[in-house]
Length: 427
Image (cartoon, rainbow, N blue to C red; front, side):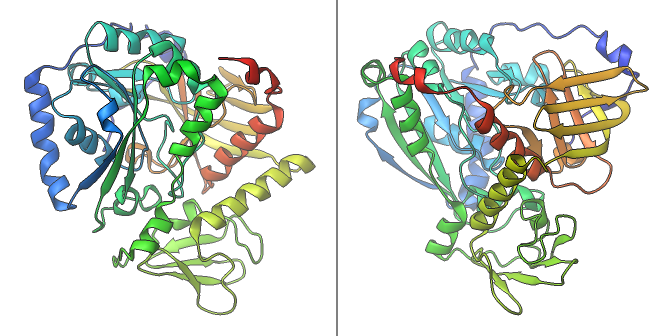
């Protein structure tokens, strides 16, 4: 999927009026029917099935739907599962660029990823209480990199207590296998299914504390798509199944280099030491020679997290790279504003550029995770920073594992966040 891009001087972009935030619209029956019809062919192609649990507790009124995020098929699954319920869909602001009217007609509510957005709560309450729409939200906020759950925001339970509606979780299997993000979302043959569960009723929410609700959500969003693929023996036989795998497995477990891994065809190779792994059709890695350090891809990714944590603790972690900068300031276009430099260390981010006009800083406690993406709107791998007014999209000018930056942000947040002792008494 592409996005409209316009070249414009930085100061001119910053002077643009920011879009107003009108109240959400209730999607018409015609729109809902059209979405259902458009979703049907791909769901038939993947043999979509689903199971349910405790759905007799849901009732007829609107609810909050929390769904894991793996690929573009996720929305089609939600439409299929909950039709004809009207849905208000929380989505990223850049998704509105060039198609704001259509997105509003579909019932979408824009927000920025990994940015505190108090106004979003009011928008969701309006959709639930005034429009009678159920609200669909992807609490992970971003696609999974390694097929496991990405961190959920803390105190999500506070949102549940404010909304006071039933909470339904949807956890898919196979959607990641069909279109893994590292593989530039190439489509592969894989069955897709979902488990739908009424996790909480309003009475349950009132009875539990915020930390207890957060723990229940964490448990519900526990999955491993590579383990599912291997357990079910779902074969991904495409000859390019390891293409781009270095985007998530960027560090060699043998020589430690972070700039030499390459996923090409069905193999992953370190050009530093020559170690090569074949990716089996069932999503496992096998060394062509010698020991297989990590057969399970999420184990390799978790090891990289440990390495990043150690660098942070030792004070040796630092990111400093030249980037091309684009800005999301309104819904008309993404604005290319020039070049700059992105730095990241234990003190957070510093982004400078555009002939000295741009200087943006972001503290380690600003967010628990990072909006990083692969092949973003077919423009390139990206690291996104910013606030509710302005989103800075940083495209590394040389190959850089944006996954490492996201890991560093998450681990740095955990190291520096205030004590959670007060959460134990919150409700």
